Image 1 (cartoon, rainbow over the protein chains, first blue to last red):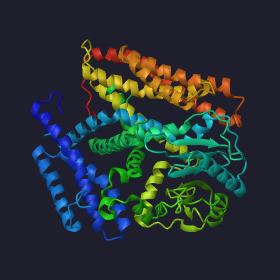
Image 2 (image 1 turned 30 degrees about the horizontal axis):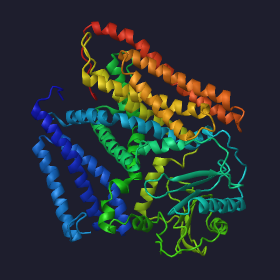
Image 3 (image 1 turned 120 degrees about the vertical axis):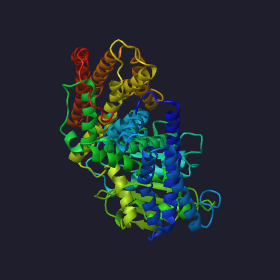
Length: 102
Length: 517
């Protein structure tokens, strides 16, 4: 990338950064919680498997956030994924996913 | 980032690597040193005398002495940790946590007498071990910072791999005679690619060791956040026995140690005594990891007041749990014998070299044109580079040097060693900011080499009368001299490289194709 970035390019980088960190962690956390509750294996095994998978999931979201053609596209992919996972988790857990209901 | 996938990944690699590079370098170097944690501790306490064997009776007697000491000095603590003596380290190590806000208790006892061991006070190799994942900060802060850096490192590795067109060819490519930037790029590629499986493995497994802290949401969802219930259900620890609030008296631990040794094979490593003054107190005898990759300690739990066995854990983990413990085991490499340990150590050095050369490459790729002044950002990166890459080894050398030179009866001696470590590091970082970059690198690296030689001289001068196994201590000193030689060589190369590079700069040549910078 050219080092003399314009203001909009900088904003795009900042947006992707927030998306990669926040969105990446959210998607990884939702995936972990969802798989922990749904994988067809004993509870402890499901949690372990889900937790081990969480880091590769987060890395791939970071890659997507920086590789997508535009910031809007990246936000749509990551945000859509997070939303879908959160809804699925809500269905499975039957209560708001984190902190509030437990 | 409107360019192709590879360009966006190259950009991601450069900048993600830069912002966490300094912390990663420190994590890699101290982690690499941790492969020899017990050896470093032994070298730093040359008064220690090893023993040929440790009988079960001696082990039981030392456990009784340990509990007597804890009853007298740590009655209020919720949990006592007792590391039992081994032939290589015939010491009883006690650790207990006091109320929040007061420092934890820690003491080494002579296993025969129960009196504090007559050894110089030092944190030994444990200092590097803890620094490796806590950076000497409050644990919560340190672990999160290291964890975030490890995640960014994983991103840098993945994007670095994508950036590479020719992974296989890079095995054999080191163009030292070309432009400086090419040389550094190739050095970064060789150290990165040759040990790539190690880098990926060590970064991922490092995060796995603290996975439940970084990613607790599976346990939140499935166990309502009860981590010890989760760990007990996976078979990694014995079940929690909550305190009743009724006072209770601990039965003698000596017979429990004997029963534990009769129940499970293998050396007994430590005892954990939970709620020692409660009617529902628990004593867990934790054995060394059996042969194999997996990090799993067989355990026998006793009811503290009666001495009855309440639970025995020995192997038989289910597949995911076994995978988890194997990943942790791979990170710690406790399974590695002498030869494999050397290989792990070399891979760790390669990782340090990969991070270090990547950092230097950033500055070399952005060197101002001849005559132009360096920018502020460039100076900052350069200063942090030098302060970390030369400053940390200088700190390590001074940590060892302080161990040999500080008076043995100095109050807070172990803390002074740590101050020496940070003092030297900061001094090199600050002093390195002023001279011209190339001169600063040359002098700082030469100073590091000199400091490691000084460590060996100080060891021979002050401690050779204490060596119980001169060959072993000479071997350790030889390794330090090897490090000194390495730093001296790099310093020499930095000095010599100046002339041809500047000469060539005058001649216009096609700009080197940039791949990773």
